[in-house]
Image (cartoon, rainbow, N blue to C red):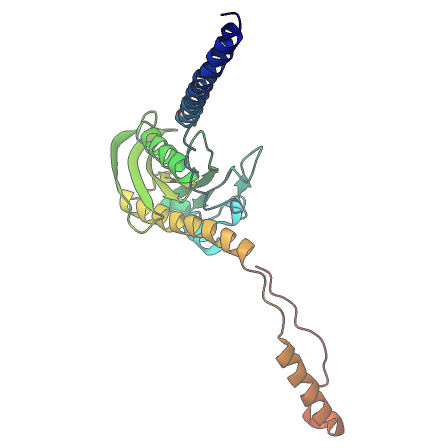
Length: 285
C-alpha cells in the first residue's frame, strides 16, 4: 500500500500535463484574438478621424495692374476730354498699386460765344488675389463687380438711372447711365463696370455744357465711356503679356551674320555702301 502511493502521484502528475497545455494554448489564442480586435479598432478609428484635404482654389489670372494713366490711349483722351488740364492725367493715391490704382482727366473746352463744354473721365482698377479661405481671385472680383454696379446705380442725386449689359468689354460688363444737376448745370453720366479675370475696371465719364452750351447727349457719353473702358480692360491683359513674353532682341544671330557678310563684300566699294553707322533711336511709347 505504501509503495502504490508514489506511483499514483506520478500518474496524476502526468495526466495533468495535457490539461495545462490545452489551457495555455487557449489562453494564447484568446490573447491573439483580443490584440487583433484592438488593432482593427485602432485602424478604423484612425481612418475615421482623418479629415479630407480642402480643394485648392484656382490661381489668380493677373498678378499686377497697368499704369492707370497710360491705360487709355492719348488720342482717346484728346477726343473725350478736349483741353484736358493735365494731358497725362492725375493719378489717385494708393498704398499698393498692384492691388488698386486710378487716374482722372478733366478739361473745359471754351467755344467762345457758343459756350463751353466740360468733360471729366476717371478710370479705376481693383485686383484680387486667390485666397484659400476667401476664394479665388475671380470669385472675389465677381463680388466686387456686383458691388460697384450697385454703387453706380445709387449715386446721390442721380436721375433717370438705367443699367444694361455692355457687350465686348471683358468677361462681363454693365453700363449705368444717369443725369445729375450740379453747379446749376445738367450733367450726363455713364459708368462702365467691367470684370476681366480677377480684376475689376470701373470707368466713369461725364460732361456738361456751360454758358449756354447744350448738355452732351447720353448716347455720346455712353459711346465714349465704352471706348475708353475697352482700352482699359485691354491694358490689363497687355501688362500680363509683357511680363510673360520676353522683349524681342534687336536682331537675330543670323541677321548679324548677314550684316557682317555684306560689310565684307562692300569693303572694296565704299561708294555703294552706306557710311553711316549710327544706330536708330528707339521710339518712345
